[in-house]
Image 1 (cartoon, rainbow, N blue to C red):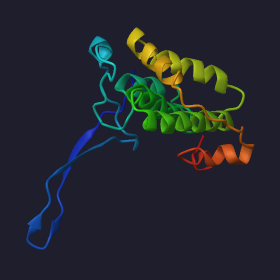
Image 2: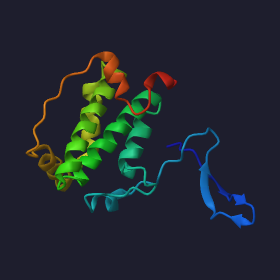
Image 3: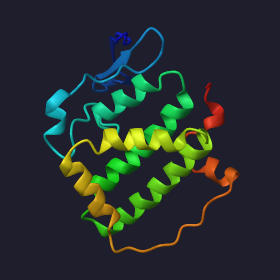
Length: 175
């Protein structure tokens, strides 16, 4: 697989006599963020898995989205938003207040996916869920979060409202 090879750049800022701590930045030739390495079996040992860059998306899920949907920044953005919401839902399953927020974020992310790719959203959702809930513990945690006693009603949004539920405006992305 052809993945961009990052070049490491180290930055420091000076303000008067003070110098900031160094910041390491990875840069690729084509401007894309480098993918984290494949966590392999080690990424399935715990519920949280491995999120080496701390972006809220497990490395295996981030790699799945980037490699399988490389031709569409819009779909990558919508799937990443949904992945973050689903993963938060798993991690916060025991916290009623956060679970309620995560449930709303998941619904908004699904709205975003359907407005971004109406003809393929259902299939994309199934593929992403297969990657996210790839262990028995993860699936059980998600099912426990879904069965939370918090009941709320959700009105389906208009197409225009759905687009506002995307964390990144899909119209601002190239494809």
